Amino acid sequence: MSNKDMNERRDRIAPYLYEKNKGILFDELQEEMLEKMEAEDFLRGVPVPILGAFGDEINTVTIAIGMGRVLGGDGNFPYREAYLSFMHLVFGDQAVKVFLKEGASAATHGDDLVAAMFFRMALILEPKSCDALYLYALACRNAYTNAEGEEDAFVGNFKAESMEAFETLTLLHPDFAEGYYYLGFCYANMGLYLKAKLTWESFMQLTAADTDPAIEEEKQEIQELLEKLTEPVKIEEGINHVLSGDYQGGEAILRPYTDSSFASWWPLWYYLGMAESAMGNLEQAVSDYKNGLTYSPSNEQILEDLILIFDAVGDREQADKYRKKLEIVGKNAEADREEAERVRKNNF
Image 1 (tube, one colour):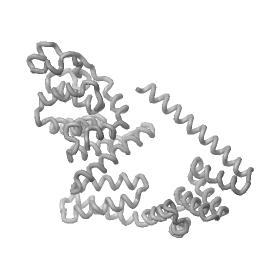
Image 2 (cartoon, one colour; image 1 turned 60 degrees about the vertical axis):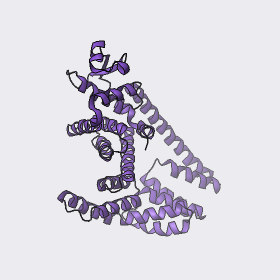
Image 3 (cartoon, one colour; image 1 turned 135 degrees about the vertical axis):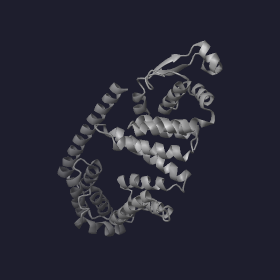
Image 4 (cartoon, one colour; image 1 turned 90 degrees about the vertical axis):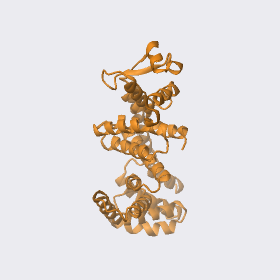
């Protein structure tokens, strides 16, 4: 994976890291200091981070670490190449280890965003680093699991970032078991139960001979979760049948679950409604969609499908009823988006 790919993949959390770095002060180094460090060729006229992130101490090491934090927050920072040259001058081939250590220290102190920045810096230097990918994915995971009072967008962006980093980790380092352990949770939380099952099975295979107590505890946890996934995986199989056009097969798998503990899960009713509608069983489709609305009253997908059905059968009254409800839901959603944008602009 190229640095360009990594930068594009990280864009979604850049605004939050920018906010975290707002307190850093920049200044140009004096000519005498530049000459002493033999950095005048690439740092002359370049503002460098001097205060705000590391207290009052200012030396070549703290400046280089500050540069790493800045680049970790914004891989497209205007002085990227100059900063990279200075880091190489100060740390040589130990730069990756330095930033992994700084990230681990920040994580230990509960500062997940700063930890993520340092691990990102390590990935800029070594994009395929197993340690950097793993720790970065964990930092993003901790950022959203520890988020209190944060908006949904924050949680969603860090969830997506964490999942992609774990996916990259398992692709580049297929023998690293812990990547599968955490990636399985990412998939399960998104309702991708088959992916979660396959991912956790890979973890179990990789750790089969591992007798470390911590790993044994994780294996026991995953074994219990795999047993709980049996029914959700079957439901996902039914949904996939519906999505692939096998409406009868999908309906046959899903229908029994309407009289189970999964009956309150709106997607079950939504895909049953989709299957029944496609097979021409419109009365049953309407019933299924309405059951779905019981558990997800503002679901635009269901509302749109109900409108299509009532329009098709010429029931204008019912079509207009759901059309008005869809309009209200849309206005509320737009108001929420406008408020979120207003907050974003005020914050950034």
